[in-house]
Length: 205
Image (cartoon, rainbow, N blue to C red; front, side, top):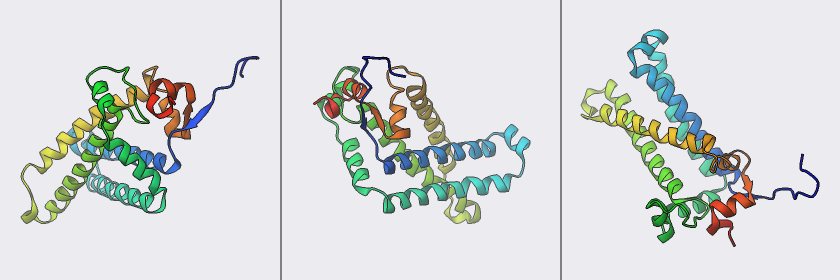
């Protein structure tokens, strides 16, 4: 309950429904793929769970479902919002470079430079994981298309992705100054005063 005389916080939209759906499809698929992948990768889990062929199928078809769901959202959702987001993430200006150099007070847009780097790396990893996963799947069925190092690449990308996701979860759930951003990804809006403080080039005007 807001106390008497204290103004209610104002909220501004940060993410559209389409942007949030893309995020949560990716997040849900990542954890499903990570869980099934660890069962296949770690002998103790593999023995405890058993049914290795079923887990392989779950892993493979979750990956296909993830890719198909993203394509559907892009085709049926707000493509204008997605294109705007892609353009913003792809643009790095002087303030972004200052931010990445450790000057965290440098004014930022709707996405700060760290979030842009995270989005680009995550997208690149997703494509490489998907491609290497397909090669591993079909390579088991046709040895002529097996490529050396594919399994190693898939494993390295998995480890790196886990590190990135742990950092992402820390900033979204624990770090006091940034955890409000989670509201934007759940409800679409964030407090205007928070937006002005952390994304001045977006809401500072």
